[in-house]
Every structure is written in C-alpha cells, then in structure tokens.
Image 1 (cartoon, rainbow, N blue to C red):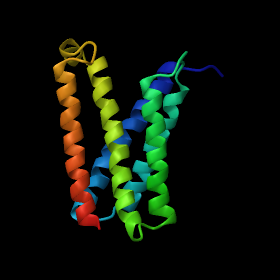
Image 2 (image 1 turned 45 degrees about the vertical axis):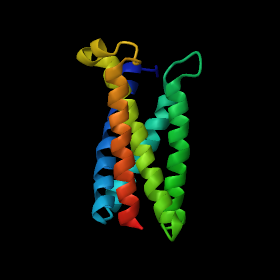
Image 3 (image 1 turned 90 degrees about the vertical axis):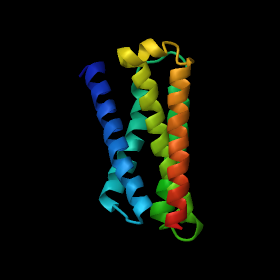
Image 4 (image 1 turned 135 degrees about the vertical axis):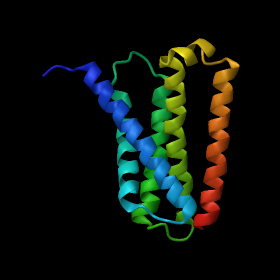
Amino acid sequence: MSFNLETYTLVHVVLSLVGIASGLLVLAGLLAGKQFNGLTVLFLTTTVATSATGYGFPFTHLLPSHVVGAISLVVLAIAIYARCARREAGRWRATYVISATTALYLNVFVLVVQSFMKVPGLHALAPTQSEPPFVIAQLVVLVIFVGLGTLAVRRRT
C-alpha cells in the first residue's frame, strides 16, 4: 500500500475542521454553563488526531507547525486528564477550561496560518506572514480566545 499525500492531507484537514467546529460548540457550552459530553469527546479526539497526523507529512527539518503540534498535544493531555481523570473537580475545572480553550485556539491559529498560505486573496495581503494583515488577524483571534476563555473560566468555576 502506498502513501497517498492528497488523501492524507484531506483526512488531516477534515479532522482539523471537525475539531474546530466541535470545539467552538463546546466553548459555547462552557460559556452557557452547559456540558456537551458527546461534542467534547469529538472535539478532544479530533484535535488530538489533528495534532498527531501533522507529524505524518514528509519533512526534512523541524517546522513551526511541529512545535505548535507538540504544544497542542501537551495542552490536550492536560485537558483530557482534568476532564476524565480529575472529573473537573475543584481547580481542575478551570484547568480543563483553560487547556481546552487553548487547544481550540491553537487549531484556529493554524487555520489562520493555512488560510494566509492557501487562499489567494489572503496570500496577496501577507505573502510572508509578517505583514500587518496577518499579524492583525492573529492578534484578533488571540484577543477573542483570551476573552472567551476568561469568561468561560468565570462561568464554569
């Protein structure tokens, strides 16, 4: 059986988009004080799979995406431990919310990076990803997630 990069990429992208979509719904639930257990399992599973499959692409040296993937896997391990092993008891509740929100943010961060690389109109605005449109987009995403994460912690604890 041969390695099909196009199929592998498609699986990776679908996992990522499902992780982001389910993660946004989980975050909405955290903000509303509701638990969506099935969606949470879907979010955590697909986000772990997204980060793990990122290492399956051919590469010759360590890339920024590998670092983000490693950080994401550590954050996800904390989220899963806080939710499953500690059942979000006491301070583990805030730990879960912060780590789950951080994992979702990292996925969206990568989505923005990929969008500026692959979408022609965005790429024209920031071909090296150091131009103001890219920096502003990433700052807006960061501010949104810090704000939503803070609200979720306050409402969840």
